[in-house]
Picture 1 (cartoon, rainbow, N blue to C red):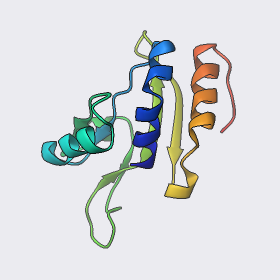
Picture 2: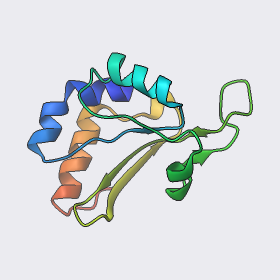
Picture 3: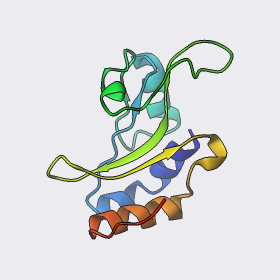
Picture 4: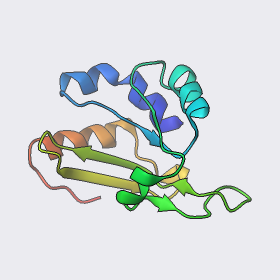
Length: 120
């Protein structure tokens, strides 16, 4: 949620870069809708993938990773996909403290758009 709030705060910056944000969650539609209203401030859509179909295709399923149970969750990931449909950059955060700051993400996005390869 922290990262979604930051993206919402910087939605105009993303728009200036011609970047569209499309978060994807294993949560059901109702929970995704709540996050869209309360966390994202209705600034961008949040897609629901409760069967993790798309999440699996990107190799981002953390099977049994839910807190205290065996619920499947998605790895916290930011992926930049270019207009050609190809992945330009990916950042997987293994824990909440590992989530990059907005400045780090912004730098990575700008570098990827410029065709500069940066290390994580």
